Amino acid sequence: MKRSALKRKTPLRTRRLKPAAVIQADLWREGLGPCVVCGATRNIDGHHAVPRGSLVRHGKSEYVMDKRNRVPLCRFHHEQHHSRTVPLRRDLLPASVFEFAEEVELGWLLDRIYPVAVEAQAAA
Image (cartoon, rainbow, N blue to C red; front, top):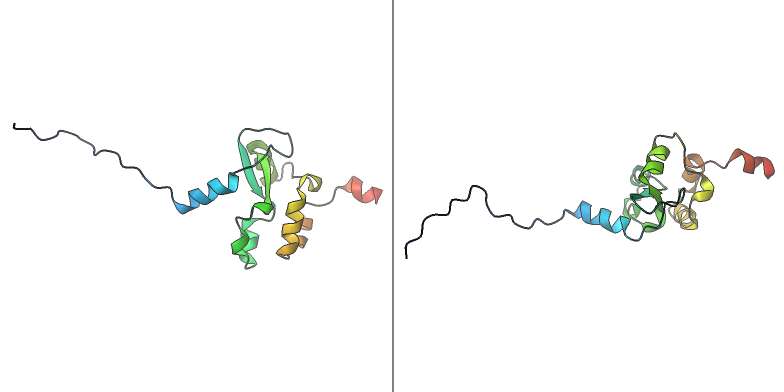
C-alpha cells in the first residue's frame, strides 16, 4: 500500500520541561496560607520579608528560597507594600521571619523595612 507524505504544517507538540527557576518558584509558593493582612485565599504571593537582593548582597544567597523568610500576601497587599503605599506592619510578620533574620545576621534590616508602630513606641 502506497502512502502519501504527511501534510502537517506544524510539528507535533513535544512536552517541554519546566526551567529550574519555575520549579523553585513553585516550591516557594507551596503551602502558603491565607494573606496575613486580609485573610484572602486566592492569588497569594510569598513575600520575602528579608529582600532577596539584600541576601545576595550580603553573601547569603543560599538562603534566598528559605521558607522561613516568606510572608503570605494577596497580590493587592503585596503590591501596596512594595510601592510603599501601605507598608506591611511589623506585628503581622510570622515569628519564623525574625528567627531567620537573626540567623543570617540581618535582623537590623527588618527594623529598617518594618518599623515599630508609633502607637506601640508611645505605650512602651
